[in-house]
Length: 85
Figure 1 (spheres, one colour):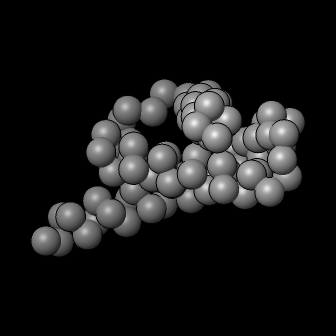
Figure 2: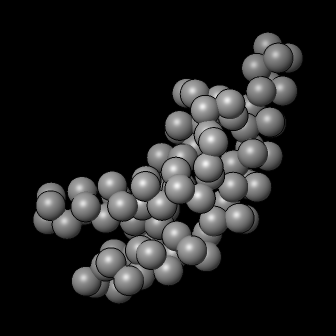
């Protein structure tokens, strides 16, 4: 149990660091790609939720370039949002 908690804390710290490093550029990307302002917040939130899930599943060693990864996730979320609606 203790090691799970430590791993969870490490993931949370890593997530926060990546979020702080990438949130402005990701928000700018999503804003530029969205046709409706009301979609921006949802897609932004979905992008970072996906990042958190990925960190939990794969761990921190999986990410080589956080900026590129989060932009790729944002691209996928934008594409999926507009192909499903």
